[in-house]
Image (tube, rainbow over all chains, first blue to last red; front, top):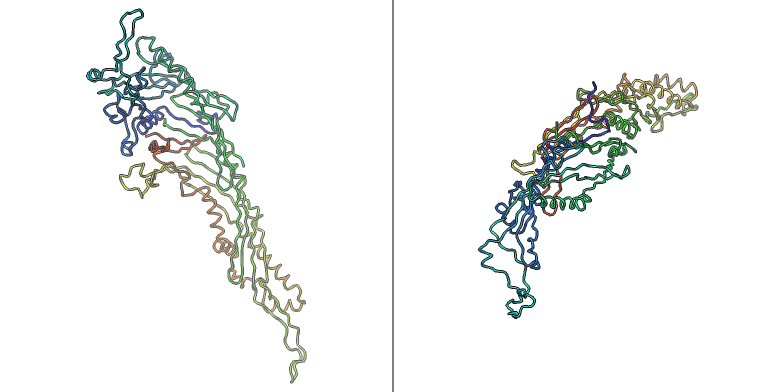
Length: 285
Length: 303
């Protein structure tokens, strides 16, 4: 019986096993931690103590003075004209990919296991808000505003509120973040659209599940919001024009053109725990 | 199963081989002044036929690739010492010579004989090659111990995975033409000398031949030709003009060079440095190349 060759369906073949992909993800997370960790300047100043989940950071990131946390603005307290803000942090603490067939069980909402040509993304999200301490709140009461006057009341307003001059935003101090962790699963597949030569590879998110948030309505709302964000923000930015590469040969021997094979039913294919690419080659003058 | 797998089919190899073979062209000309004569060549080589085969013993075979010289011409210019006959006194007298024989000189040009040899129809060299692909990990010897990979990159001292062609056999049968070319040279010399002596009257031709013997021997003497003219031709084109080395070098460079045919930086960059951020590089391990009957497969793991 003839052994199936990798190149039975195309001139060239390339594959990436999920184990290698996950190893690459770990390298990226350790060497570009600022892509995965966001928070206020207060968090960034002492990220080892203040982040909710301690990231694995490559030593060269520290020795080369690269940031671990991307610094963002404080979370504004609504109604204060952004004068008051809270410290916060949001991290993708773990990220892994699983390509059909399933190596880990999916939430039942996503079908329990991957369908053919599907892949799953698992993420552990850590986050938290820097809640001001009771001692601080007692020491610094809010600026008094004019009280409501009940319509029809005969007593008159004793103006106590003082119009405060404009001031710089203040981030309310905290002793630490109040943290949470979420497990997030997403399933997706790839599809190729468009005519040959101008084909576009798109990642289509099939489902998303945030595990164990109560009440159920809150979980559904968050998932709905996340899916909307993915559909209208993330997915349009994740379209890749399938490349056609032309390599010139030395000694004036012409050129080699490589491009995605169009005769394969799934290209790229997500199967056998791998992403597989089938590529055709043409040589020309 | 490896983390990264790349494969190229035998059909792709054959298509690539056919293209390179059909597009290959090598043209060169040179000449050298070798004392009593000058010699040179002009050559334009193309490739024909041949097959490429991937074999399950982990080798790639290229067999019976013909070297077809569209142009392969040599020339030799010989400067023969001037020979004068006649001029002697037929009727002497006490007051001097009354009647002298006419004096005729030959070989007074430089070169006197120009030989052009069209060797293209006779050179049918054939190359066969068997080789395998090897990978080696190259640790840059200039890199001090303890230097981290980022500093090594900054200073151009990265380690590399290198891919080599390991030549198991190269059959380069290039110069079987010498015996044919030797016959051509001798015939051309005979014809050239007869042409040179053509204007002489018959008695003068006989006289020249009587004095100097067979003219081919004369020219042989000028060229310092040994008895084995085949060997002499090979030496002339091979050593004096370096043609053998040149062609062999071109072919061996093409099919069996010692330099790596490809190098892959280790660790391998996947995100470039940007805005003061270090590049993201991943180490590659277990980098191998193997060949089956159907395809060549490159595999590596992510460390």
